[in-house]
Image 1 (cartoon, rainbow, N blue to C red):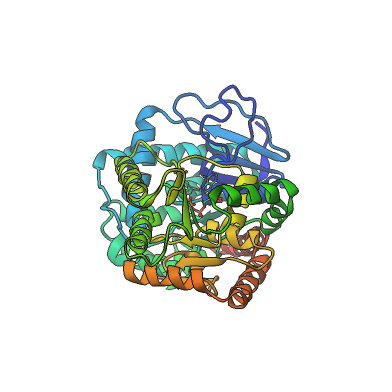
Image 2 (image 1 turned 90 degrees about the vertical axis):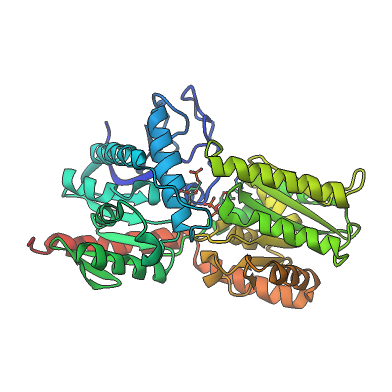
Length: 471
Ligand code: ADP
Ligand code: F6P
């Protein structure tokens, strides 16, 4: 097995489920923020990505993608249930997102989570060359930093949490809370989307494990573990250049004609996830139609909701509720050949997403809680002409950076309705000012700046941590 000086370890490879069952790499990006972000930086970097390719059973051999090697991991049916659908996505995911759905604590899932984390750590240890940097991603793999340190003390180990990291009052509900924090403390640098998350982590490390220090440097087990906020971003140049392509522009024009040339288009693009606030948004739109504050002849909504985690009960239930509600809205307010809402439960390629973004007068991004939300940034990058309005939840990490969006509390349906109307009626000069300010921000803070900031910080901390005497 060839070794790399940079290894990324993430639950998922940047390939769509079953995209390459025979090993012939059909390069389709997995929907989801993590894959979008890391794909952009790794396709030009000599590195190895350790991750799961979707599905159960033996992992298919996958060819390199440019300079990026893929090291596929297999999951058995039991592991898929216990580790991915269970502990990661039915316990940690809802708990980390403000418990907007009730987290499930099933004692049987922990063993699978631990076992899979160990296998990922072993695979990373195998493909990392001496002294390599290993960058572990997200809540699926919180135990990997510590396990990897035991296997390979020579490595520089980073961990980045893409999702929110909750306050102690919530985190303390977790049955395996101490082990999860200890696992993350195996890293030299633990990165989060927001400062508040780093603060929560430092508090928990003190409370649960007696670790000392400040928010940005925790003393534990004779080492210093650095922490910090590194808000993730997108490949701005890629989205800009996609948006300038004639194909995309034509596609956007065609979409506009199909939707009704004189109508204002509201667009939402999400994984079909209960954290994304899709139901609240549909309620707001349907009440605006009901009260005659928006009219079918002036308005149309497009909701893209790409399937996600479909075997998990909560997600199946959500899909049924959303599809029922979309049917009800179209049944009550639509006309033949003129629906009030277009619902698309399918993946799109990047060019088609760019065309959709260009078609939208108002982009509605209203998660109940979100670590960052890259869709909001993609919309801004696609609006090179400074038109369009972004309605953005205060509870998305992106709100801290995109303060020129129309910020909204998505739990407050009346407030959401008023904000949608404000965005729809805004003066074009005001919209242009807001959009230009947001684009300037993301241009300076793109995905390459993110990776550089994180890896530079990791490099510095590594030197420090390794030269400290062990207690
Ligand atoms: P999350 O990580 O929770 O899925 P983000 O908004 O941060 O949320 O990231 C979602 C990513 O998935 C974005 O890069 C977006 O372009 C992509 N995406 C969303 N919907 C689709 C879709 N229908 N087809 C393909 N990619 C999608
Ligand atoms: O950012 C949260 C996250 O779990 C990422 O790890 C991933 O990009 C995305 O959501 C999609 O989720 P899944 O890999 O479960 O389809």
